[in-house]
Length: 237
Image (cartoon, rainbow, N blue to C red; front, top):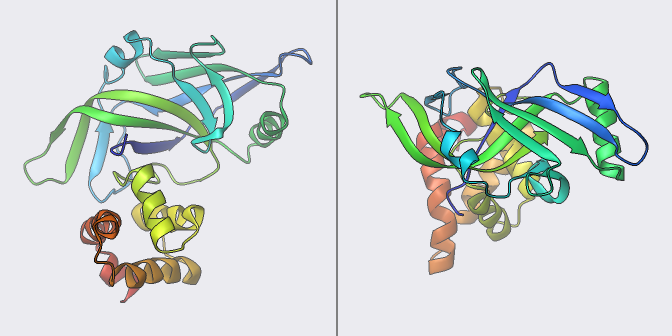
């Protein structure tokens, strides 16, 4: 599962419908849109129509989370509280949210328009690249989960996997959420805050002395991210 990728989009409108007290809320919205260009990753990416066809037919259990966290499960296909449908426009999600505290809190944020981003975790089955390497089209993916996320940037993370970011954060004694936010800001092309720049600088510095096999596994993905995103020039190391 080390090659899981995450993609997010702004998905207005998200719809919430009140249900009875026991069944919580009904949710619907887009987890992905076809043929829409991503923000620079640093390459531009699009999802081709039909990319989810095979994975949805496989009937694997797919869950819906808050912020990709399995501690905050909202629904699942196996329990039939989550329905996923590949439509002409993209991947459509309908879910019955549980009557638990974090789901009620999320519903309030969604209702007020404070949160409006959805995301999905996947591995690539087939993709196409342009000759210059600047454009990627996802032709087929294996879907692992969908999430409602609190980040604002569309396509906030690139091919750096959840596992690798977690390893990097652990090895460098860095908060994984802070590191993820810094990487997201960098890849979205927004100006880094001083705190975000410092986090990235510290991660690079702390990774340099690593020589063990385990440390090499952590440092290598970071070095690739540095090369791809021109991290050295952006944070003025």
